Length: 308
Image (cartoon, rainbow, N blue to C red):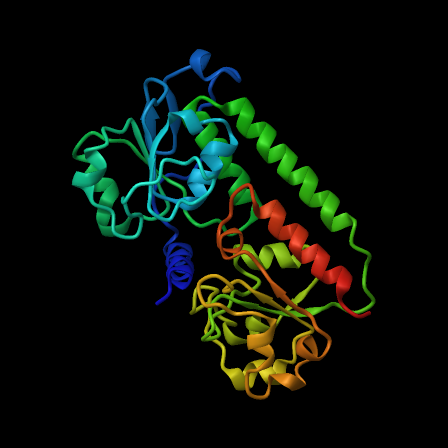
């Protein structure tokens, strides 16, 4: 399966299992300066006695969060999928199939990961390497909490508060700037060209819900057995006739307005007829970090363009 879909299916599994690992709040660092931060710091099951100087991130979203809060200089290695920001020290380490020996060779003070694949937390625990889980968020509140937790662990509490505050303010402003509609817009959010989508119960769905939009994928996963990520049929999509289509598979699967319009039977769909097919950046669309603001802006722009 393509990398983006693999990421999303992993996220679905995490949501179904509760993700394990570190939830709960943390003991915040004393001030904005990492050097003067108060330790020990505890977040969930992780306690650090000193500010970590060698942080390894095996999650693209966590990498973005760490750099956003000013902890970038402490990050010494990131996984092979962490492509933002460009200065992140990318390596051949994997977050999907983590290798304890390879991770330990980087001599980390803290490892951040989205999924406890192959019991990597226990494996690293036996090597006395602390691991903090940053699982797939189900809501913006989850995102804000995870950013604050990373801020506490890395000694950037105030920076994390600033980032989350600015995110929340900007998202509220963007949503408020979109005029109310007399009829809610329906949408289809495409994760892959074989019609995997995300329901309203997912992080992506929570973003679209801010605009009062109706998700055509909800009918395909009414009881949540697909973890919020069902595979729709082409016939069901044509019948649902969404007002808008959002493509989160432009990089992985080379999908575009032209390829969608060329699909059998899709010429009758309102989104195709009215030119309401919107290409998204796959990376931004599949992560739940600081660039969620960009996703919210993209949705807002699309809603404004939709016919009344």
